[in-house]
Length: 251
Ligand code: PEP
Image (cartoon, rainbow, N blue to C red):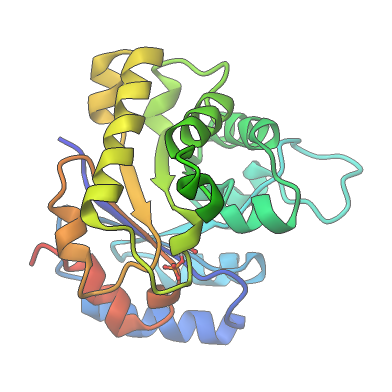
């Protein structure tokens, strides 16, 4: 069925040396974990070196963003094919911090996802509501707009290269986790949306990760929910021990 994915978003933390050191610590801790896809997303400058560091391990590398053009006069941007060149297999797109601080919109997310999967990357597409949106009962409406916007123009085959991450913004880096019920109902809603927009087979196969203060002590309950297929982890991915414990949720 759906292979669980545990992905660590290292955000703007760690030098190249610190990133490699973290992976050197992590590799032996997760080496026996089977049937879980383990991914980490370091900063751009570390990607090439960490890709070498995870060779022959069960850890894959993601970038935290990409641009939608292949090349050109786009100062500061990084194209999907260059991420592949640096050893990435995955890319996170539309993280709420990019939406909040860097003007990411559903339309730019859509273009980036298209470019990423055309280049051969798996796109981890983030959606999630703000606290004010949840409090005004607009969670489902916001999620629907983000999902429809991100996936506009895609077909069922494209969905094989896309993972959705539901990350309620109010739960990111705050220590507040959505309750298992709150998370499950949004995951189910996303799966139903995908069934409507594509087909039931695609919806049954797409992986939907939960993100927002996932820790070793709450991952098991979250992963027991029928529509939660993994986790996108920020803070707890910066320590080998806690990230390994999350990846070992079913051991
Ligand atoms: C994230 O950055 O995607 C995230 C979920 O962060 P945290 O686990 O720290 O809440």
